[in-house]
Amino acid sequence: MSENNITTQSGKLGIDDSFNFSCGKDLECFNKCCRDINLFLTPYDILRIKKRLNITSNEFLKIYTFPLLPEEIGHPVILMKMIPDETKNCPFVSDEGCMIYTDRPWSCRSFPLEPVSDSETALFQIIRRDFCRGFEKGRPHTVKKWRDTQNAALYEEINDEWKKVTHHEKFSSQNLLEGNSRDVFFLGSYNIDEFRDLVFKGDFLKYFDIDKKVLKNIKANETELLRFAFKWLRQVLFGENTLKRR
Ligand code: SF4
Ligand code: SF4
Image (cartoon, rainbow, N blue to C red; front, top):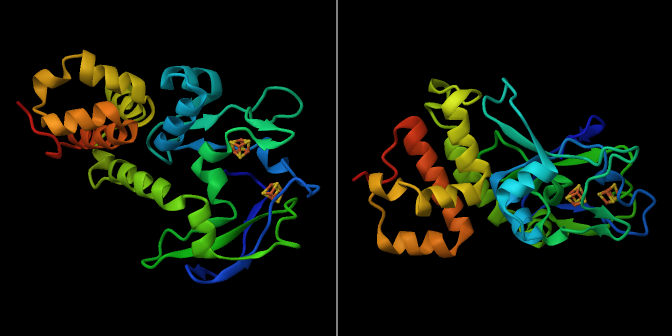
């Protein structure tokens, strides 16, 4: 989640360090963090939410999101559409809180901890929003315990697989903001149901020799299909030999 009034607290936390934070309905700020925000969605966020809503990735993208093509990032990004009225609420916020809580996006679940990206060991910093009261009477948590309760490792593991595309050494060799390369990146990153159709209904298997076990696995498991899509992207965009050609 990103927003203008975010600050980061100085001082880095290791995995066994503690911080105080509690979030809940009893706080006057309840749900304030779920409105008028730039909520970036990762490929795995999209997969989880469209599955939760029991709709296709295409439907999810059309109804709930909009794309941007930021030059400074160099590839298409997807953001959640806030409701276009005076509330500017996230479409999934209710009086009871987040309606998709167990499948909420990575940036919602990681708050208030943010990994320090230039660190070799696992270090985190606290993110603060000026209206957030969660720090005032918060209970103590270790970073490790907090991250475990947020299922952070699974999300990060899949995001790291995607980073092998978005941080590829040949990333700058392709213009992913235009034309066919943009469409390929979009398909393999964000539109898992269309990618499945490409593999199982299109000509894909005429060109790639995929092991039967792998095919069975990606047919049965969408998360595995997404990891497979990232490998395909590395091959078609950057020429890595991640998949065997016929
Ligand atoms: S997805 Fe859930 S937690 Fe995230 S902004 Fe929307 S309502 Fe809030
Ligand atoms: S404590 Fe912070 S994270 Fe929790 S509802 Fe309030 S503003 Fe949102």
